[in-house]
Image 1 (cartoon, helix red, strand yellow):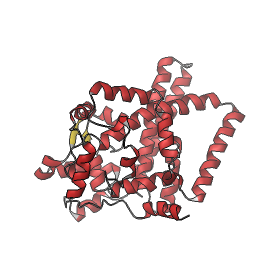
Image 2: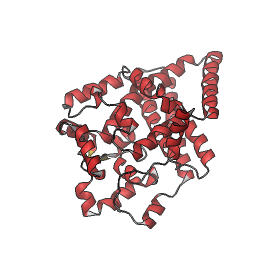
Image 3: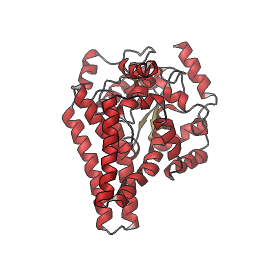
Image 4: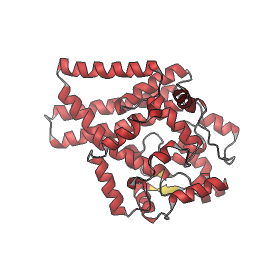
Length: 333
């Protein structure tokens, strides 16, 4: 019980970085950019669900044409990433002012990814506070895994991406998240409702004969496209960066609209700005980025990358000893 209380407390202690953050935005700007817009958040949720429904309908309407099924897998997999991004907003209490309503909707958004928002929050807030340190659960979880050791030649990174898109990386993700005692330590009511939802879903699939559709349009996209994009997202956020201070501990990627729709929907590409100001909603991170880039000092020191191919090239050119550089930056802070 003591360990459980400690884990749950991780979320309660907030998401502010323990390292000093430079004063780059005024209080008025931060207040405006952090304003919760529940209507916009729920509209975004509805758009993602409708895109999934449309993709499945098109595939079924064309009698399981291989091209439309492949399109459905890509759409469903990438939209599950988008739902995870909106769940991430809920984890930061940015969907509704009511924390109960915020957490209920957050769990609904998380359900298609099989994650629990409450469990995600446990480790995610610690990740914000202890960014890229030995106390950062995301950083330490990937320590010693070849997939997260950089520099890495472009061909090798693309081979790793293909590995995750193939579905072979799914067991690794399941073990790292669902067998983690931190993410498993969630409120009893959340655990029981999640279990009930899964039982009802699978029972209905058997009773009403849509087990095949559940496999084709949920499980397959989940273990392939979702896992592949999630790997790209994880690496793009915190690996192969300079580690010379808080402005270079993570990466913002300014990319064409089609790349952000696929790899970083709803402002997830502005990850540096998110770590500096986790209270800013995902809908305002682009605006925050433009305000900050008007500051010559920020523009000169921020780790901003142009496009996802530019990010891949950065990984190949990253300096050896990334973890040592991160530790040195932490000590100097």
